[in-house]
Image 1: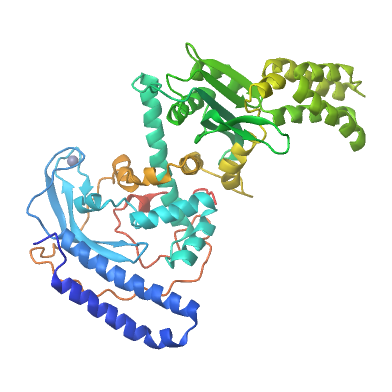
Image 2 (image 1 turned 90 degrees about the vertical axis):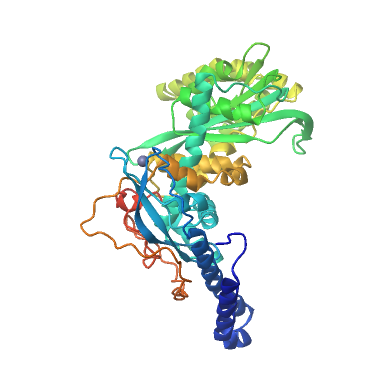
Length: 523
Ligand SMILES: [Zn+2]
């Protein structure tokens, strides 16, 4: 069969469908307002595109005479079904893909395969890649049910919240696996600081809490960017400082050591290379940040400048002040000038002010003692006059907004509880997007990669064999029945399957069908 151009029969066939659809829509198109016309045309377009897609796929599925080896073990494949159907949902239309499926004949493998699925870039899901990308972007932006409603509204595609969750988390797992692979290479020494790189770099790190199924856990976030040589001015303070370049961002639900590996690899990607001479590390007072910063970001000929985020320092002033002063006016009268003193003179001015406080009782004295210890411990990181003179960043939201915009905005909604893998998957995807790598990531065909990472399980033996359909002459497909009207948005009840797509179910061998149902939803 000629595979380089569509047959005249298909073109004629699709042409007839277009004509029929337009005839059916005619009266509506001539009487409705623009909103109604667009809605109707969108429905026409989905049906025509779906019918075209189905015919194109039938051509692609026609037998080519060769039997591919098992992609998992290289063993011989045996045909299971000459024409197994698989329902697909797409951004432009829905279609049924009918193609041969195989099973590996080696007893120790026995996996099922559909080579055309891999060739087409399909994963284990019903969604085609372009729709999966749209669904995934919606799923990392808002709660899964909300995202499903948004996709329905924007594209007239019926997906449920549970589908959005599954696809988003599956694709996020692929992104996370790629990062872990990079980190593993770095740990082995196969991946090192790249040659070149920016002369100055800034790395900001912070942590925030995410509610997992068992308890709250810390999600650590990092942002790395070249620093300068361009300058930027803050019109409010009149300060001039080195501008941040394009940042690479990462997030991980992990311990300090693992997180530092992630931050280091992210910083290398952002421009921390062998030519880098200075790395500014911005953070709050958390121990884990300062313990290992110099180890992971420094090196011979590299100066690491540790700076405590100015706003975190302010918070500690307020904490000490609140313990001592009851009246808001008195508190402000003490704290506000001290903020200026901290900015202009650094830690010594604050230490002197804390020493001069007279706590009203033992509890207040404890607080003041604790805050004084904090300032004393971090005094070297609070040398703001020197940093300002050197035009270095001192915080002002760079660290503060990191967790809020990247993690909390999506993962800390009311009542949200996450599986560890789900929270990590969404965080990783949000970091990929915030780093400007979204398009590049989708160019790696994550759905196909997902299939490689989590291949379908061995098929279970069936009591009745499926009679193979003749495959020699692929008949032109009958025109599919027009899909049902898009149902109105209905939130998926917790722990249930998708209510919005009951008519389009993949075959029973799909791995996600066997996923435990009823585990904690993570909104
Ligand atoms: Zn095999």
